[in-house]
Image (cartoon, rainbow, N blue to C red; front, side, top):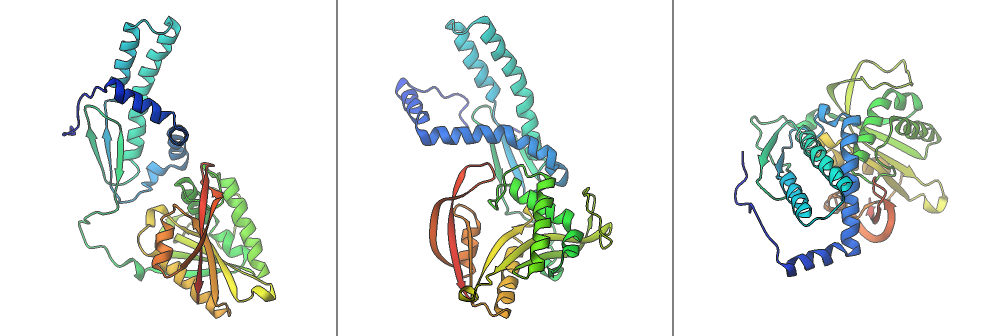
Length: 341
């Protein structure tokens, strides 16, 4: 289908071209462009390696792709340059090779995006720029069951229990990092580094200051992730892990009243089901039961989690500039919260 109400041709005046050139020269614009180019080349390989298309990582959240005729505009730029006598024959050959490869790669990238959810919509525009639009507002064909009926939160208290859930713990950590969550890792996160992290956690929980919780559902999960770790408690089918959170208690006498919430992770395919809220309530109740009366946490300032913590009644007490990094390596500010129990 063809998109309408989009200008087929738009010719800028010399004054408008000057404004565009001046804008593109601004440091902030150049930084944005560099980030876009890095993402454009980096995301498709991640989608392939992580098999996000096969897993339909966005679930039933639809995505719409408006594919512009960008190749036509590139071809016009090339033709105009040749007419003006610009470029050597070698440079023109490279430009022609780019035009051929662009058509193939651009189509492939749009198809990868379309395959992320189970519902998609493809629209062709006669000009303009490629646009991907995702929404979480859908009209289900049937009324879904209340997901809270099947969720269970449990605490993993020894290395054996952590290793029994290792494939799924690694998967949720990789998925959260690779979709852009700032949780202490760069993307793409390898399975080896994910396993190293969870094995470290499994050792730390034996010391009593780190508490690990997982939220699962009885819907079957096929354990087909290869792992060098074997455990007698690991079966071919086990409850699906949708989220996890950790609580760090402070052993110092002068800090015994407080604890810190870290690594709240919810599978990208299970967002907006109240999982984060359930995990936060559980960890608050647990902390209260250990005698703590105050909790703290921090999250990326631009993260959607900020709005959630505010809604849950957490008090925002400060922001630190360039406190951490996003998975792509760029710096991000952090917002700090506290909550009286």
